[in-house]
Image 1 (cartoon, helix red, strand yellow):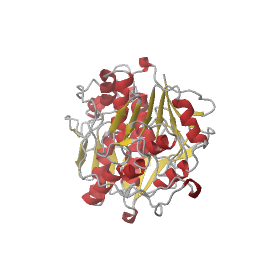
Image 2: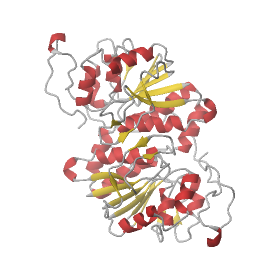
Image 3: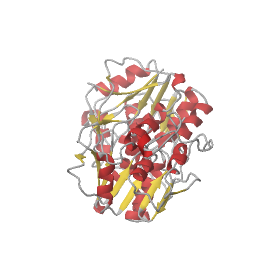
Length: 226
Length: 226
């Protein structure tokens, strides 16, 4: 079984590295192969400045059993969403056709949405871009900021660190609870944050992904997570 | 203020990427600069197969305000611990001299211990190597598997994902709780694992870091996390 994480310049590091770590600790006997992909096979640099290599190109990976789409900051999302026929969004649609599970974490939901892959589904995303996801009328957005939402064969996660909880959920869905508990033990994922604030109210959407021709008029773009 | 994460071949990815993500979201005005270092400045490959670049060499970074030592699997630790005068352990001792905080996550505690930097301190590590850490008689090992232990200017974390909680604690110690809450909000770190197993009892230590000349006789080396 092959799980692919297609990445891009400016991707959020933990959206990739957190779930990747969890998936790679799944008992080898389960046969889960997790690969990180980029369009051309070149390395990418995360939004916070870590440059890493990928395992394969999109062309060399025409099918996936599980698609996992990571997010990134608002200005990155805007660039990724402008052209719905981009190589990235086209690849998402292509592999989604045969995928058993179609997943996103953080703003990755906006990329799935722009590819038309969340229409008719309930979904979540980073709290700071919930109102952007609500810009897609065919998506039923969960506004309670859950760690993840399961809807048919879609699994969408909340912001950044949500990917850890979501990855364990996916492991349960792909295999069983016992397999997920073993990963939880190995990664010692028994979290207990030393601070506990609240999730802020969702701000207005500052990402505008439609060109003027496509009809759009949103405010100036700002980093939406702060 | 400079925080350095010295890495090595086979390092655990999330031990690096989790805390790095948290530190990089600290309000820029606080002046925290987080860098990933390797001895020669070359890229390293994590134990789970992600190759990433580093920001600087050990030589170019002779001092650090905060030292953060990541862990890795048992066989990696054994190699790293065999020679207490290795470039890696020598670097830890060198920067520890002037560091405000000396931290580890996961098996990184064994590296600090082998460098003599946890003597006289209370500490924790990944549950699977607690009995290895107990092989250092001058360290007071917390056997309750906490997320982290603060002792003087040492902060040690439990296994892998503990680094997220520990990073937030360090941010509180370096700055204040408000700064840590802001990072928690941005990373949406309000964890809620969908499964909740138990932490297994600590197995016998299978890492032997002393050469025969130094006197040691431990069992055959196995991966200790599974």
